[in-house]
Length: 326
Image (tube, rainbow, N blue to C red; front, side, top):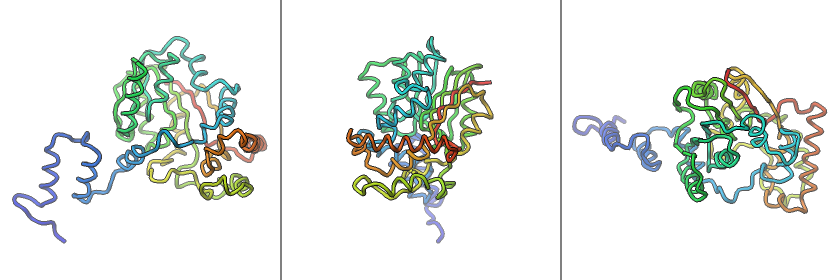
């Protein structure tokens, strides 16, 4: 059906002109952007869908697999060889004995990493960037409450990010790079923004992209899942892709190659997760936090360790990568 003609242009053109004249531009509230797109019959952008997903996440209540104490110790041991030494602390000891001047954190969420960078004095100043207004508001509130100076938060779409040249001494990704549609482009932008010899710290999912999962990736986790009491199970075992977030694992299998292309790798420390991640994502995390279930979690960890050592798993799902600008 042809668009309705009204005055000097179509209804669509007049609505677009009116909305565009508000001066809000890309900073207009999410609900206005959604309303505008519905009026103009525009498909939602991935960034808008991702923002809506993260704006509504129950940040205080969800139990993630990496919050289980035995799993934390396992990851620390894999990365630093010591169960009580966290990767970021090891980075401080080895790289930033004296604080680096300026850092940038891409995908800061509610600000956990930036607060840790501040407390450990890894950087004198750090800027956190995220798409979610709700997460940024919480990050700012916590930083103010704890009187943390030297932390700034800005909103930005990773897929369209533009950064100043030679501005930072370190860049950090913690569970955010696998949400980027074009890791090559973003890492190129990061490379440009870093000073010569600056550091890149990546703690990240680097496994199959969302459309690359096959039953073979889940085979070992399925064997463990089938042995468990139904009372522990929340959902059937499936690829661990967050529902409602179209940016999840969007181009994750390209991350490692994109880093190696532009940076000199100083440390590559896989902590795998090939069994633990898909399995623990479909189990009741609160029940797994019960000390009575710690032996079960330890059994999963021992099983993953054996599968890594015997060569069943060859490509890790997760790794910490420390690299330097060439």
